[in-house]
Amino acid sequence: MSPADSGDTRDRILRAAAELLDREGREAVSTRAVSAAAGVQAPTLYRIFGDMTGLLDAVTAYAFEEYLEDKRALSETDDPVADLRRGWDQHVGFGLARPAFYVLMYGNGRSAGESPAGREAAANLRRLVGRVAATGRLTMSVERAAEFAHATGVGVVLTLIATPEAERDLALSELARDSVLRTLVTDAEPVSAPAPGDPVAGRATALREALRTAPSGEDGDGLTSAERALLDQWLERLAGRR
Image 1 (cartoon, rainbow, N blue to C red):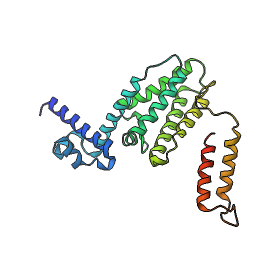
Image 2 (cartoon, rainbow, N blue to C red):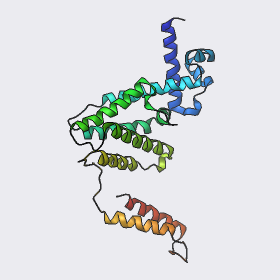
Image 3 (cartoon, rainbow, N blue to C red):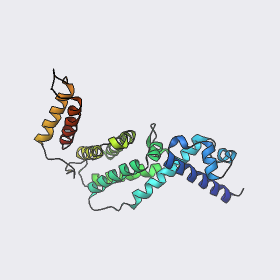
Image 4 (spheres, helix red, strand yellow):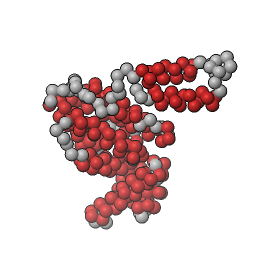
């Protein structure tokens, strides 16, 4: 087999594994399934990648390349904080759109520096933070700020991925993003910042917590289980104004 043929076969196997991962999840990526989808024999897969771990490492690098395509498409503006905010939203959007890819990239304690594309992704975040630092508005070192933003963002995405889609609170990402920006930037003015001291949200939160710990029924609040559940939904919605 010529080097060109070998490269074509490698790319075909990678694409097959990536499509299986994207469509059916990690459990679908087996030696037999990938070999069948790529139209090769299992020994060919082992010869090129060594084992399944080697293949998954290559797929992780492939995933980072796709991630970077989106990152490179984001044009920079004159406002580095706004660019950092958009970068956060793009990162979260990628993770929720490609959850199996994202878990492979960042789950199980993986480091972005394990592949050239991963290192480029980390360098891109550092550069965005560095642009904020150049304006004199960063509250800590660039390295620490980049690590803080990265750790918080990854934690948020993995938490949302682990939550059933119907139960996900997507506002969690905005809350975390704006909290990070307020910590990192001296004069950050988050787009989604709520009005300070929202009395309705605060009282709804307090009442919801009181009802959660109070006994139900005739000796408690006098509400049926169905009524409590409905009231809890209303209070949760009102509390979410915070």
